[in-house]
Length: 331
Image (tube, rainbow, N blue to C red; front, side):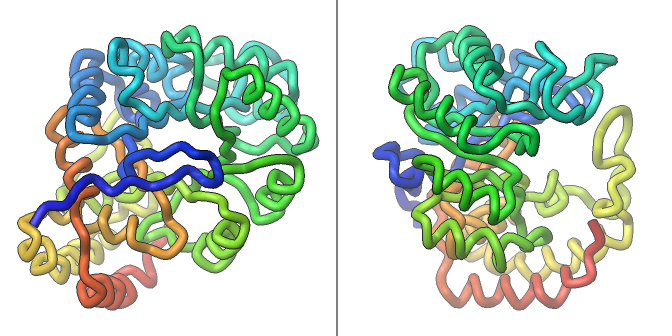
């Protein structure tokens, strides 16, 4: 039986969004073997049609490309979208700490006031909008006090350029510093059945502080999607090519897990990926699950997971299967 799309609040802001969010890292093409613009736009529009309001992007995804594609896709539908983008990975200035090179251009982690004000206007231009619903520091910058960054973000909020504030790739200490400095509405962290380390540290802290958690890589870069078998070969700049988590041995363990999840999927007439996403959303403290999609079919499949409700027994079965098969997964 199908329910409505699950809706949840972003922290203490009054903003409500679909619990399933569309993540657009792959749409930027960078580290995903390029991108197809028309398919990407179709994926975004299919997500919106299916009731996914939360769309998450970042300047770093293809150096502005993902934002431009999102901007094009949401033209005329801006009111249906809760738009999230990020700041803090900069290539217009070499301040803060050098992080990596993108096609020969140095990218720095920098969250100084000057960069935050510069970046928001660049993002608004690429996204063809005059406000961002949820603005997130992409990676943390140890060279800038969180108080300075937060003051800049609170100013953008007063100016109406952003509606809520988030932080990504944080420690418990970071979260405490943000909460002390202003209103932190959400954090965005990697979380999945194979990557559960935040359960012991960050999640309890966020629950206590009223901070939402947007989980990314819920399918662990596709590892938990039920489609990448032990024999799949990765090529080009695909980051999965040399990732130890995608070793053949690990893919065999995941295949054994998937066999146990089969009956749960069948009971809901759902795919394995859908029950894994639904499981993620029903974990204590996880508010939103960001799922990538590069074409309309993937977008529709992800959206349907937000209409799935697993029973307590099914979640217990999935937890047991995960404990049995995934405990020694590397990565």
